[in-house]
Amino acid sequence: MSIVTVQLRRKGVITLPIGLRKRYGLNEGDVFALEDLGDGTFLLLPRVSQVARLGDRVAEVMEESGVSTEEVLKALEEEREEYYREHYA
Image (tube, rainbow, N blue to C red):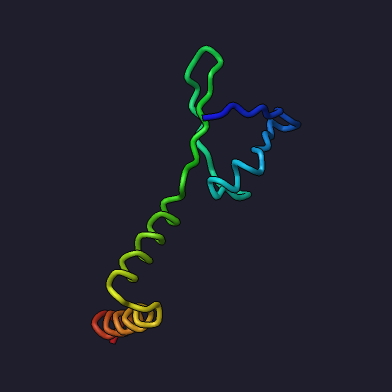
């Protein structure tokens, strides 16, 4: 673990050093949780969006199962058509 000095700028902006952003794959727009530990100490934690996390999990399952994106889209289209026939035809 290392200590890095950062500066609080206008509107509360803190810039994370490029080395840390690259090391941890952080990008503009990423969301963080800031926990106040009391006594002036803060803990900054990256928060992965649930959509991104679930999307990654779907991609993992597809890869493990050997299913392509095209196959998933075709199956979804077939399900949509069947649902339409059952509920609206």
